[in-house]
Length: 114
Image 1 (cartoon, one colour):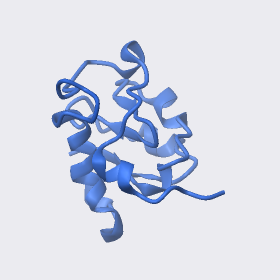
Image 2: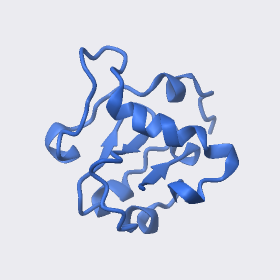
Image 3: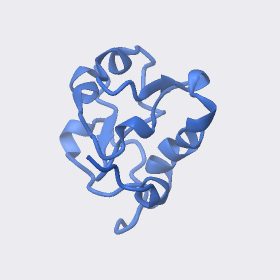
């Protein structure tokens, strides 16, 4: 089980969650951030820090956000556009910095206006 970042974060990328994560398992794409399900320790610190209310425990995801569960895992398990291999489990987001790309699902979402 893991926490998942859903659509309220897309195009906001506020990152307070990343600063609070003791496992350093929140990675920054281009338009969203993603929690590595294999590195997450299920502590919930990210959910408490999220100002956008975009983080849910996977079993608490609203039905309208369920696509983000598989998409969040895909960020780590599939080869993202412009990359030669999947990100996998690098063991810490801060050391590798921003990834700069998103999954095809997030990339295809309409841009938030405002």
